[in-house]
Length: 356
Image (cartoon, rainbow, N blue to C red):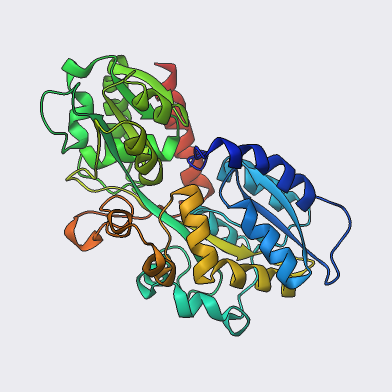
């Protein structure tokens, strides 16, 4: 999964971020030691780190990654001794399979069970079957963002990304799992399939679609759609919230064939040097007021029900983009780890798509 987390933030906050991270990256620990955190880029309100340091006396050493695939080998190699990491669902499954994570003591993280909705822990069982390792931090869906002034009818289906009348006006995600998910759902398959015939069909669908695609993008989908540079784009729900604020002609939809419902979660590494402080950090991030600050900053949906209750803007609190009623949609899935052979299979098929 690519860097869907590069959220646009107010300029004054953006300018303050490097200063905060530099301070957090100080080599000197706090009065009560330190905690070393590895998170997606721009995926936390810097003020919450400062508050944690002030309240606990624990120094936060903070590092960022752009993709799960960049994060994993760095953690696996032990090149850096991180305590807390925030991977996505399928990568957590891979880390569990490779014995890289420490089981959590939820007695030391009381805000997690008190504030995070039970449905998110239930959903997490698809990659953390016994809810032993992961505390949900953010979640969302993948859908289609379209410009109502540039399309001839409402967009409701992934199949419309193959409509020739939108040639050179379609933006696809430049990510193997996300691209294949679109083709798999269009064809009625699971996005976690390892069936060779289904994968071949999905690959051929992507090759067939390729002449219609303006660009395979990651962060650029947001700015291109805001600027009316494309009619339709595959996008993450958190990005859609921001784009609609900037361009009211944009509409976000979860296609009728279903989609990916993803969860990013806090985990503690098996060899974490500061495990007790890691627990304190996660517990702090699960506090309702802190979770609210992070939601308002990054605009990705919070699984923290107590934080959602604190949202004053009713249009956001009840937003079908930020907090959709998932029971109203069919064929929703969460990515799972497909094994080393499965990863290689998908990567090779994606290379075939890109080379055609």
